[in-house]
Length: 577
Image (cartoon, rainbow, N blue to C red; front, side, top):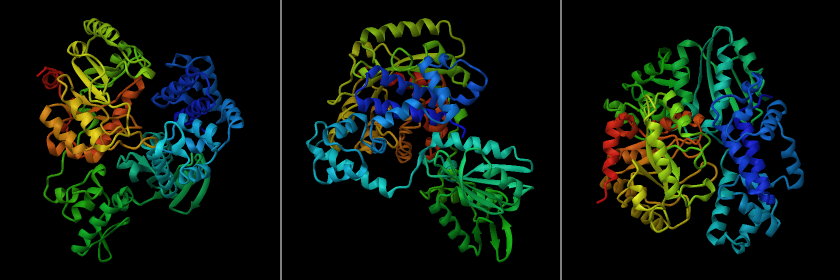
């Protein structure tokens, strides 16, 4: 079975987790974590790099040993080292690691202190009140674990949007090469840019349905054919992802695309509008009696009920139909609108490339400015900068800007917001920067009141510019912290600062509903890559998708503006009161 970058990253992450449970050397663990991130965000297919004979040790953080393991995984689909670790540790520990709130450190404590190997054992221990006795747990953590266990049994498996894209893009391109195929579109929640995807729905128009169906089930990543007919089939990939395909005639393509894109609530609302006009709307078209009057395009479906076309990202029945009826739909922001990126890291902290390499990569993607925002000193795991090292980098950026053409580097920092709302670096060094991004990286479980006040106090700081990843969530790993987001957004409006939409696929933070709140309150959002390597600038596409789900237009986004205007706007936040 072909192996994707996401598969290699998952194996390296699992190795790192199991090594941490064993208590292995921290540097060894970090090497695997860095390697996982490198390959996940590479932007190039490892299979193709190996086929061309490229030297993988030229990738950031990849030495001979890791390069060999990548080749092994790509060639065999597995890794001998991971198999060895599985033999040394209970197999079910991997399932524990998938539970939100249970990182390797806590799983290590559960394993060594309570001899917990399985989810069932964990549930019994939490139910019996035994987890709260462990250092670093407590009653609240125990209740969160119980809640996560219950949610896990109720919720279907989903994958992050960026991971789903690795499978969707490849399958779509494969089907598009089939003789006779005219159109191939991946619909469903993937097309709506949902943060996670349960399965993939692919629609195809073709002159030869039989050939298209045969090619679909013959894809080399298919592990099992669950159903197969003349115009539809369902398969399960080796990754576990389910994929459905439907072959539709051209006259029904728009109706089918609308139907299978969803959401269910949006589709029901559109069907009701049709019923009010004596129309029947389904996946085959728009019908007046037995006559199909529309359905070749999605635009024709909406026009049949008196509406403008509604972009997929808005189709959640959250007011988009009313705005379409009033001809007031937002003109959503697009990737090409972004002129800069205000959050990126280099190898001075936990990034993988130099200042110059990051600048050239950003310029290559059409960006005109890039803010370098390393971590501050408190985040020791990321080798955060102290005042001396930050001042040194400021000088390096000034010197590089004198040489660069077509892009400007801005001087910034991602400074930790301390528990009391203070910032992790002194004012005398913050005053020398172009912008200061404040971030919560600790104490995620403070009460709603304390967490909110902590952030509000930080935003009062005279050099505070942007609130990074405002909810603190990590998809599938950490729930958002409890915070009054409306108060924070209104504080940003009064203070004149900004909120970040972090485009990292595991974050996609701001949440879409909070993007709408910021828009309504007149607070600009900054779509940032939070890039730690040159390949991660490609994640801006996911940030833009999230912004579109949040109804954001070009003028609602800070970094759609040119450098001069951005300097003026962020400069207002960098002047002490």
